[in-house]
Length: 267
Image (cartoon, rainbow, N blue to C red; front, side, top):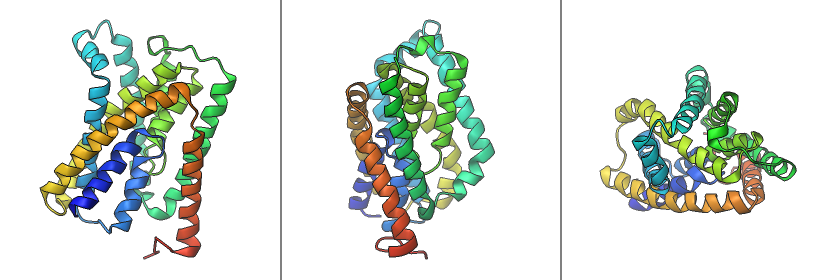
């Protein structure tokens, strides 16, 4: 892996981790195009940790308050743990199936699912009054958001899009939906890294440690701006543009893989 490839992958990871377009799907496409096989898992894990830093910086006040005043912030702790637990259960039950679907020929359909999900989110927001806050959530609402995050383990399904859609279906306020979604990414990224690290270490590092360091830094910087952008987007705009983008991308991948073969080869 070259430094240039590391920078591109870092930018894509940082942006797509928090924009509703699926970072895993985009990384899978780029790794296929760059022909990155050995060591790709380790690099992906490290990029995710880079985006984790971005969330911690943006929501540092809430995170510090949760750590320093856990009793006062007990609802945040409780609902984040409940939502994460559902995601973990889904991973444990369907992890092998999801991993078998991490192939270019499948992600086009999952991008289409993301487009439908974002469209449904916009329609719901237009026709419902959103007044729910995180402290006022019910246990089943937290579980539902965690379930939506579990679905997003599939490559091509956006994690941020899924969790924000789940929170929106619970009639949560836009600001709280964004905050809960991004806070929920912290245990998701950490948990995913813990599960992936053993296999990643066995695969080894491709191209040396320097591309990894560069990729992590770039992912953290681009992730920071992506989170900031998403907060403004959620509170003031719709997901229409991202729904169109993921739908077009999904259709292109499906057509290219099955018929045209401009970018992807069956081999």
